[in-house]
Length: 407
Image (cartoon, rainbow, N blue to C red; front, side):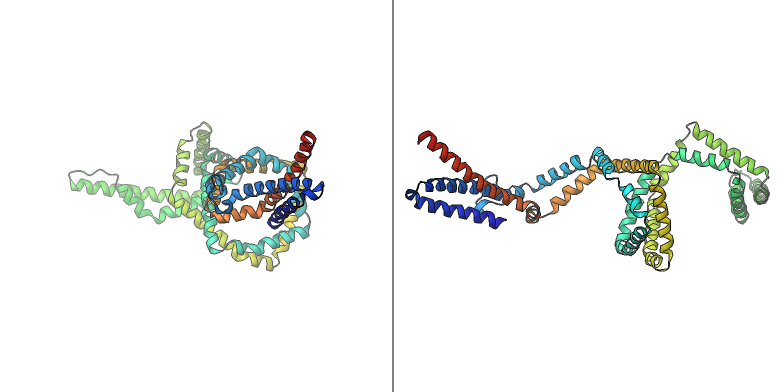
């Protein structure tokens, strides 16, 4: 396109020279000269404008030229801001999601077993490529940070209340508690000496050593009997679901649920915050995520090869069919997914804008110019072509008006 535009400009220049040389030989040549002269002016003007966007025309440092090179940082900031405000707004994301209906298309596509099989096969064969050792570390850090960030917004007191109420309504609650009580009783019995030692610390020393000795001996004897009795009670409760200890435990759980419902959530929220912000928590989450990703990468090929793929294909296809045949549920899920994406976009908007800005800013000026020219270069050269032809037509119009007015 650059050669076409430049060739057309050269052609108009040659035509102008020819028309100027032959102007007196025919009445048509003045018209040709007017067209060619105006075409050269229009073509040169648009060549200057297009070139000035990226470079200094003819290498001359004319003011307000090489705009992209000089204003790279500002252009990157403007592009990032434009992308965020025009395409990444919550309303626009919701509108596009509702228009595209990706869950509806996905459920219709995966309802067919062949499509479900192809999709699973494609995913399983690319998991090892996506989860290389370096990528697993990055993904695990991202997952751990996301989990910790999400946990900070969880209403932990409300969740605990729901869990406690559900547990207390369960008919098998004592069967669930029994193994815990048995393990606790065994632990108490195993650590009997440590418990007795801790109990002996509570006796206050006196000035008479004989009294100190008697106090410690009595405390040890009492604590020893208490430890043995407590351990035996736990063991007995683990074997008898009608043991009174269960009533005490259930009463304590009901009181805890009632306190949480009454708004006494501060201790639980404080506990949650202390766990979330503990560096060891983040380290544990990263380690768990990395091992899970490693296990997924190691066994993805095995899963595809040992016949389990058909099982997952049937499960995926059946789930997709059920979803596709339930329009109200599909619409509700579609709306919920759109809201989640819109919320994520709104919260991540500044980060996405900063990412675009940093990316553009990291490009060298020549690289940025090359990328822009690759995308819009042909259109810019069309501007030169249009400028040449429109300039020629304007030249004809002005020549005609001149003849009408001045003869």
